[in-house]
Image 1 (tube, rainbow, N blue to C red):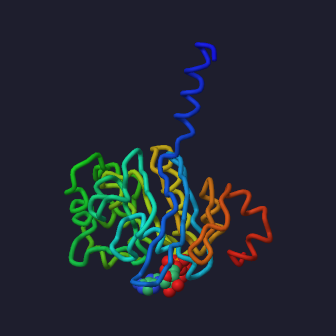
Image 2 (image 1 turned 90 degrees about the vertical axis):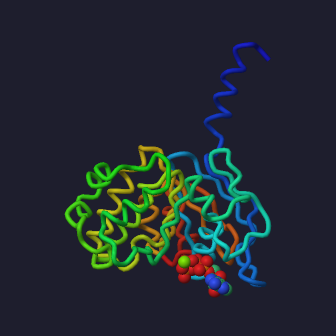
Image 3 (image 1 turned 180 degrees about the horizontal axis):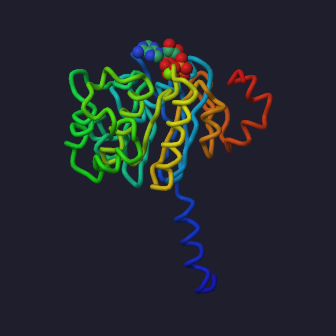
Length: 250
Ligand SMILES: Nc1ncnc2c1ncn2[C@@H]1O[C@H](COP(=O)(O)OP(=O)(O)OP(=O)(O)O)[C@@H](O)[C@H]1O
Ligand SMILES: [Mg+2]
């Protein structure tokens, strides 16, 4: 090997190393075996769509990545930016930068929009400040003094995403962010997710609205009965009628 070949190879290795990686992950609810050997990679700043039919194991996969107690992970590895997440509890994974926005959004009742955001900031780290959040989410700025639970569904979803940004966010896990929302609100959330992409935030989005998720995503993973049945680009899924019919009903 020539001397000048070495740095080129090193650079190739560096850019191809996934930022986030799941290796052969298995998880159970009690004795119910649900996540059955899932592996996936996400590069820094990339959006991955995690798709599949009802009950395929999408939510369970996100919950296992976030290290919730249920389902319980019994095998496998999870790596984020060189950190071994599989050895962590959920609060440690959150501190390491994994933020799960669950389907029900978990807005804290009795707190204003601003209090919900300020509370998220209590954790140390490099999360977004209020001004930066209000710039990206003008609707939240207008409603900063309003009780969080009085917001519309779309505004609550924005607040849940904004709260994740207020923390030290490296990997954003979104579970059905568009569920029950009007198309115009879906578009606004899409715009926000697009705008945070260049900031290096890495996202896994689970969505029943597969077309919307694929429009946003760079790559896709399809799950079926807790196993990965497809990994590829978002375009490959959109172009593959069989795959879409079989696993996505689109
Ligand atoms: N708390 C639980 N206890 C036992 N089994 C569960 C629990 N939660 C989910 N399951 C089962 O795990 C499987 C995967 O569920 P999961 O919610 O991960 O699927 P999903 O892909 O998110 O589905 P959906 O599209 O309906 O949200 C299903 O068979 C479900 O019944
Ligand atoms: Mg689900």
